Amino acid sequence: MLVFWAAAGVLTAIAAGLILMRAARAAGQAAAADPTPILYRRQLAEIADLADRGLMGEAERRSAEAEAARRLLAAADAPQQAWSADPRARRWVLAGGVAAPAIALGLYLTLGAPGYADQPYAERLASWRQADLESLTPPQLAAVLKQVTRERPDDPEGFRYLGLVQAAAQNPVAAVQALRRAAALAPQRVDIWQMLGEAEIVEAGGKVDADAQAAFRRVLELSPKDPGARFYLANAKAEAGQRSEAAGELRALLDEMPAEDDRRQIVAKAVAELEGRPAPSVDAGQLAMIQGMVSGLAARLDADPDDPEGWVRLVRAYAVLGETEKRDAAYASARARYAGAPQVLQQLDEAARAEPMR
Image 1 (cartoon, rainbow, N blue to C red):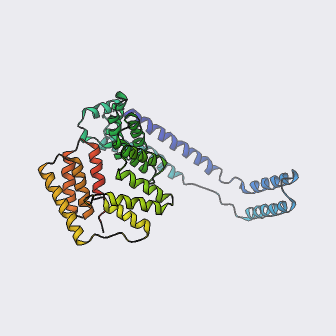
Image 2 (image 1 turned 90 degrees about the horizontal axis):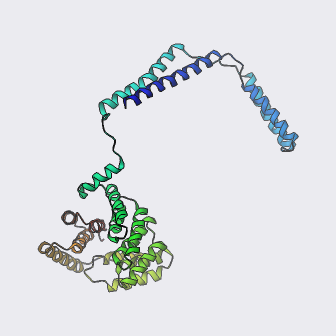
Image 3 (image 1 turned 30 degrees about the vertical axis):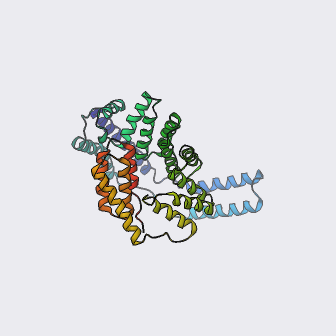
């Protein structure tokens, strides 16, 4: 590293010296003839050449020649100003060119780590595999899982986890690729197709595109009553301009959803938007009923906490009810309990971001 800085300093000094030499030569030629009139004379000759070759009309030729002649006369009448430079300033330029790498080297020796060993990617990857997975960032965990899937190319679960981690690492393209591989290896798994459809939506910028629709149709082939797939496919029809048909499908979905399902509010809001009316509000009786069911769910989880779906529902319910303190407490408890289950963690994250009902 010190050799590098020494070479950088020498090269910087040479560059500064070359700049000063050119500047000195320019200063010595400051009294030379002004090249501007020569430029305009050459332009007049080029105009005449274009006209002789038939590439410029007579009217255009006269106009161009008049403009070039006007600029030529203006340049000839303008007083010539010689460029000059103070020779004493050159020493400061040279000193600055030498001092810059020296100062940078001093800062590096003070604040940097010149003796730090190289960290090849293979060694870092090996250390990540030996580390506690909870301590890794999503990109690091994705790198580990990519190596694991190369070692176990026929394991759909590895690709499913890789898709989850890639999504957490803000890499939707890689998430879709991993989940497509998982779906190909386990074509009967509804959860993988559901995740793939949602990942396709993220990759498409929030649109339920053709790829996402194909994934959700596959979900319905395996689970015809799946509410998530029906909701997204209805949204796809709304995006395509089929608003009345989409509203009808969402109303049918709403009629089939249990009263305690905290996703009803989202579906009802979507129906109201499609029909051009305000979203329905929840009256006091309904609110009390919902709060009672949520309290019952919380009590059940206190007695039997090993229920990841229950924790997801509880977090989403608190978020929808606007009870942020209870949401945050349930969210923290669930994340600590299922720290080693990326799918559950993703579901908890989505549940915590649910919009409160109005």
